[in-house]
Image (cartoon, rainbow, N blue to C red; front, side, top):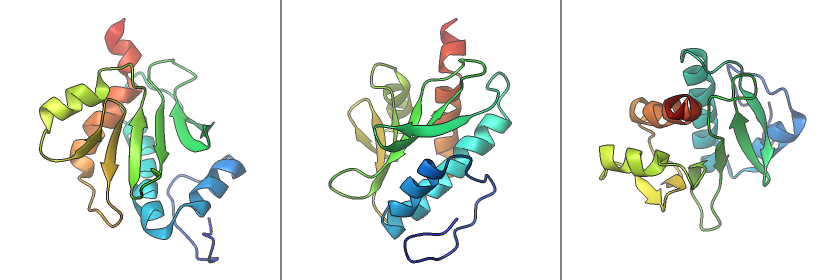
Length: 145
């Protein structure tokens, strides 16, 4: 993949959808780095989580979105850039995912209501803790059954 300045960005998970790839290329460089790390985390977590199946990467509301169409196990995860900068991982606002994550790590992250965890550009991501949020989103409906 190449960014807007024609620089190569490495990914262990090639893009299957050119529109999603273009969305990543259009993100500001500092945000893109964090968003690509979150993208890798989503695919890696799905691969090692029982019951998830294949991940579908698409655009929803112009943002990269990750679904579990094969198993219907998860709630949609989206990645994006808020209007006031930085970057974020979003989940469906009518789930308990962010509230549960906030209770577990109240001082470790910046939360946007019950729909997002936000990061400043250049933030160091605690992927170990974020993996828990991603895993819970990917199996959200399995927990409810």
